[in-house]
Length: 359
Image 1 (spheres, rainbow, N blue to C red):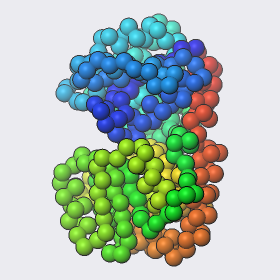
Image 2 (image 1 turned 120 degrees about the vertical axis):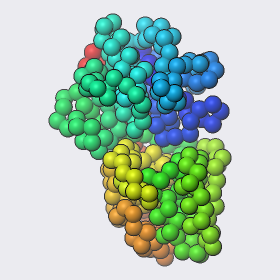
Image 3 (image 1 turned 90 degrees about the horizontal axis):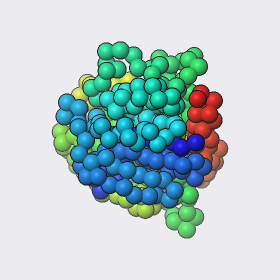
Image 4 (image 1 turned 180 degrees about the horizontal axis):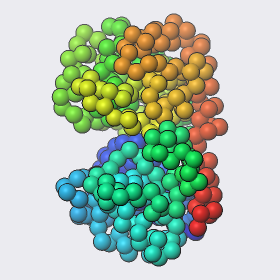
């Protein structure tokens, strides 16, 4: 079985995108390449080809960006790549490349599957349902399957998400300090403003992520005045892992309704940074939003708090500071939970079994 994964953008800072969706597609393909021949196709400004471990990666250069949308690239040279695969796994349903791929695969009798990672652009799926154009939908959480109306469908599966437990791992030689950590894109639906409001002046907070919204970033800086808050916008995986290993806890305070009144029902389809922090032995705090309660066991691996509630957040942050031994136990439980439920080899096995059963 030869598998082809397709994602709009490659993960990484050098011409790619640093985001959970891009990391998810890359890591799934990379770990799958250890089991079966696997290629990852993506798009960018320049044509590139490289090999990562056993994974072949091709960046199709100079694609057409549908209606100028950078999240929605497509190119005719994609069709040539499809002929080399037995199974194609699209990442993002609502982009033109995925719809085109599904039709070509159906006609050529190739297996075609899709995982929605929360992005999209203009596509025919805005006018007609493309759900059954795929042999299967591989959701990354129960919440994803529910919100897209696929509950009870035989072709809708939940594969969850994984984390590289060798890269993201504890280090007993590194002492945890009192730093609270947020990792993610600096966007309003991440609810970072409520976390900034929650921390007391003597609580150090480190915010790691790229800026995508100038107005929101200015608001965060204004809220941070007089507090021990550090913004870091350039952080590779080595430095990121070190930050996870040192942190008192990792917080993901995403919201359905942001500080500007804008609403979304898919603020988190998984919560990748929670998994990374847990894999490093850090307790985590999330809001009771979307998929995140599927990852965090309240009171065991961390805490689940109401969204848009800085008071509730501060209460749990204070508790972790005052109870270092319990915080350590929560971090150990978090690592164990990842090893049981959220490893990439387990996700790969689920995918391969679904591919084989459907084609």
